[in-house]
Amino acid sequence: MAVDAKVREKYKSEVKPIWCPGCGDFGVLTATFMALGALNLPPEQVVIVSGIGCSGRFPGFTTCYGFHSLHGRTMPVALGVKAANPDLTVIAVGGDGDTLAIGGNHFMHACRRNINLTYLLLDNNLYALTKGQASPTSFPTQVTDSTPFGSYEADVEPCALAILFGATFVAREFSARAKKTAEIIVQAIEHPGFSLVHILSPCVTFFDTYDLYKQKIAELPEGYDPTDLYGAVRTATDPERKWVGVLYRGHRPTFEEMIPKIRQKAEEKLGPGDLQAMLDRRRV
Ligand SMILES: Cc1ncc(C[n+]2csc(CCOP(=O)(O)OP(=O)(O)O)c2C)c(N)n1
Ligand code: SF4
Image (cartoon, protein in one colour):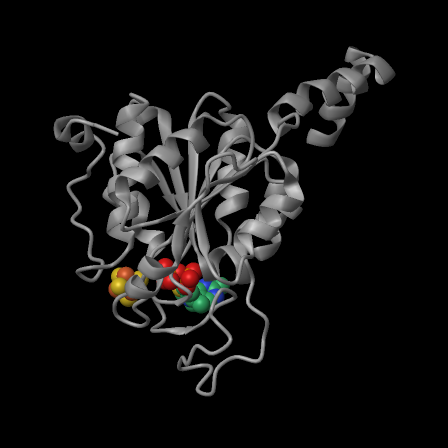
């Protein structure tokens, strides 16, 4: 994907990223600039919502609208922004802890709701901001400050979880492949419905997985069928390989499409006047 450096510049804020040199999150930021540039989206038409974590700093490094919310509460904020302003492009950004531990409940139900926004999951397999404790995507053998002998808990595979909870676009990439990540982010933004981009984004300070992922990642083979839901779950959970690309693509009405239909049904049942009266009564 060729996106002129000048075009990318317009999404870059004056705030210099304070991530550690080599952090995988830099690659995701570059990929996001490339994707927004390729789609020619004006920064004021894009809202980036994050939670807390190293990844949570993301919106501040862009010229888009941003909301650095609470730990694990990215989804309620992003959903509110999108529901109130359906014409805006809304991107949610979360770490693996933010998304799958404290924010796990919100994340799963966002997949079910199929709201039309894009979730960038920056997965570094631990809690980085708080200095390296285990997260739901830590490997069972991974030694961290909170798991000195490895973990006895099963690790979570985010793509499989999202597919089974009803997300309609699920893809995986590696932050070291910024161009490929940008191409996937473009597809995710264009997808009508909830799209997850699971990005393997190593933390060079607490658990450097660059070499591991360089060995493990593989592009999906020619002829791969992303509409086969259970095939996608098997591919997402392959213990030998980290497959990158669009793992799953489905189609269901979006949250925004359903709201007017529900309103119409309520009006058919109660009549427009009654519905308004009911809302007015609730306001006092
Ligand atoms: C309610 C609440 N609980 C706990 C914390 C402490 N805390 C801050 S960031 C974080 C985890 C960050 O890990 P992750 O979401 O994976 O993001 P990363 O830093 O790895 O990008 C925790 C537990 C907090 N800020 N707020
Ligand atoms: S601690 Fe890890 S995740 Fe946080 S900025 Fe540094 S390298 Fe990145």
